[in-house]
Image 1: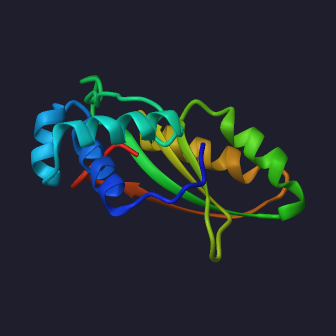
Image 2: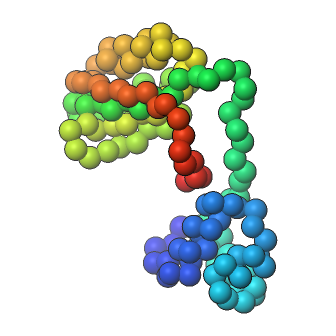
Length: 148
């Protein structure tokens, strides 16, 4: 990926695609107030530079039940970070894992079928050598969900 900074038009184009990656070039050009050829050239340049790595669709969650989504903040001993990340990453319930600043070091986004399963996963996190503390919260409803 290039380190060339994105200009305002590039950032606006990417923001539009994050909301709907299927927008036709003509509609993108109209929304950006520029020519269709400009959008095509920008898209090609962003793809070539590795800024845009692909186009995707959003799929709703399977209708197998509501499920439990939670965010678990994890404070760790930094000497064990690599092993902790490897251990947490092996759990199929972990959808995303972020490094964060502040009181906690990691943020795991989880999805389980029940609160009992969530409790079990958190207990397993706490049992990992080097995990100092956890703090969890359950997600109730989604108000906005845009692709990354």
